[in-house]
Image (cartoon, rainbow over all chains, first blue to last red; front, side, top):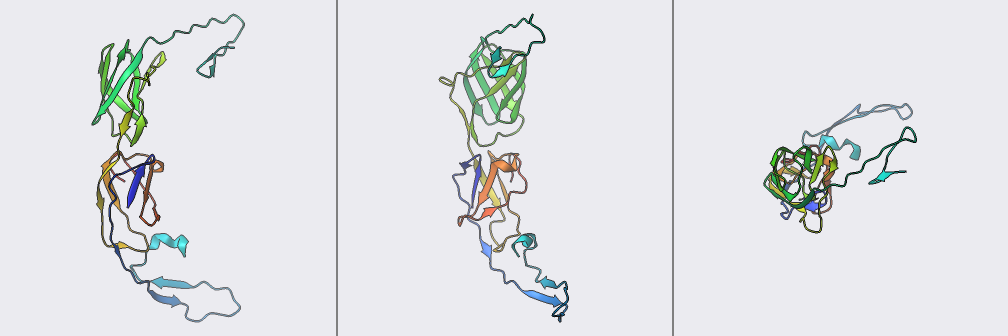
Length: 57
Length: 159
């Protein structure tokens, strides 16, 4: 990981370790939907799912 | 039309007096040791209004006609600077041919946490050190694969 301020970089690059996370869908509700009507689906993920990246979905 | 350093002098009527006094003060040296700023020069003013390095102010000041010393109110962000000394008469010029620029280095000393980060993002990382900036727009953080880390907050000692 590298940090820079005003285009001046730090001489030291830090190493960071990532943990492997399995993305798991816990539930989808409702279980059945109409083929013609517009409906909202609620998808619940495992608690480890990163919630600040909603824009990525 | 009278212009001083690109600024037009306005005159309400045709009988307009204008007096320009060239500065006799000149900064010939500038150095920063920790947060202690030392300025040397000739005919340096004592009626200082503002002394700063980049966006960081310096004070209280003590000085003579040849030397000014003050303490930065916080750490300056990494970069290359000339001091800015302001009096009621304007900015004291710096002899850039003589005065070596002030170089503030970036020194990140710790990063936390350094392990167990969610590979899909969402974790907060805290970086401490010196030469950091109070403006998040000055700071960029990235992983070795080029992925940027969104800077949420920043002080002169912690991002």
